[in-house]
Amino acid sequence: MSNIVPAKSTVIARRESRYSGRALARIDSRTELGLAEIESQAELQAGRVMAVTYVGKRAMHEVAMLSQLEGQLAALVPMATSRLQAIGDMVALGAADVVADTVRRVRR
Image (cartoon, rainbow, N blue to C red; front, side):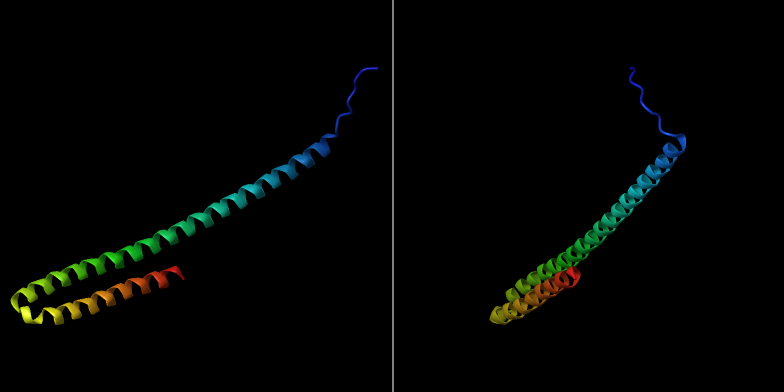
């Protein structure tokens, strides 16, 4: 006897083809949504990095300018050196605290 394989009806084949097409469309849709969510999270993270970096750079610049002024004033009035250092240290610590607070706020 020959190897006869029964053929599926064309109605069943079309139904399976439609089902497969819809299943593939759902997969594509979920993939696109997942990628959009990942890209959105990446943008948020990049914005957080930019915010923290901006505040940190500004703080470093201002502390450097403060230190320069402290040195200049100490050269003009040597007796005020310890007081100038104390004020400079308080301001630098305040700037560091602002940077740390920015990091905490941005991470939320």
